[in-house]
Length: 232
Image 1: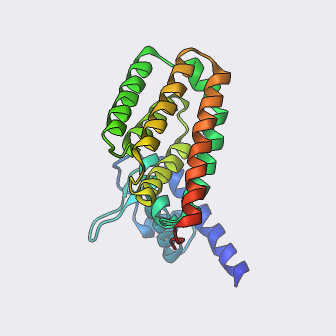
Image 2: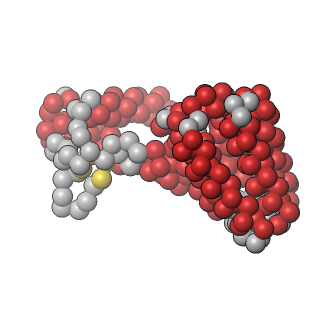
């Protein structure tokens, strides 16, 4: 049975590749299932399954009684679907967290070199909003996400953007914004230190501060996993 599934998966993947190779622009209508089946020498059920894969990734929109429309690859949309499939659980957040950690640490030097004055201003405004929210005891999840998105926006890695979007959605739902004010203030201060190290073009310090921040996130995830019943 597993070999049969593997073979069908390979057919689906090849058909997805053929559909992507059509070079459709966003908003264009896809050929009909019959047209694609004939062009690709495949059965309509196989083409339909490949289209469902693309729909699951948010690359194709299907509506009852209307032709399918090509939406292209959108990182945030991909992230939302990925989060939905993974589900809200400690394990899902931890796995996505590990990818974020490795990616961001490995690209600190790049974002430090590319940092512009406009980015610095945007990041300072985000840190200020985070600090204000923390002092009021308000959740800073949105500001935390905005900071990291802005800091690594110059890298332009679509896959990472999707993974990051999935992490933030699941992490926000898992934590529910429940943190102590002292913890919130500490998080805001950490982001301020990361920013100032990047602004100073001090890659070593920026890496250290970012890694310290991630260590704090890892500690909170571990503490939560040890005290809260696992979500499945």
